[in-house]
Image 1 (cartoon, rainbow, N blue to C red):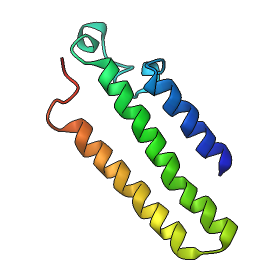
Image 2: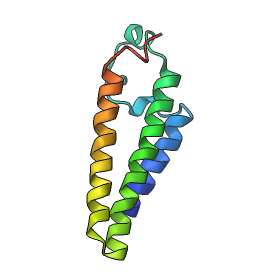
Image 3: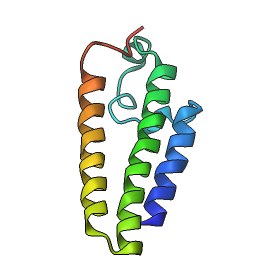
Image 4: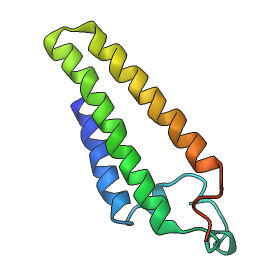
Length: 99
């Protein structure tokens, strides 16, 4: 579990510094003409923040195991799923990342 949290933090650092745009599915597969229509800096920063948020929610899973408190796992899972749903809705509505 700590490996996954660490991986998400490293990915968050890469994305927030705009070094990991090739890791964003969908953007990576677009033709160059289509990529020019998107604000990659804003998209990378948003995805970086989301990676940090997801790793934070996974900390509750780790704490749940360490302290044997079952409701912490449930809280972390609901938080994780809520972040994913928010992320999907936010990215796919409103053309927020178009130039």
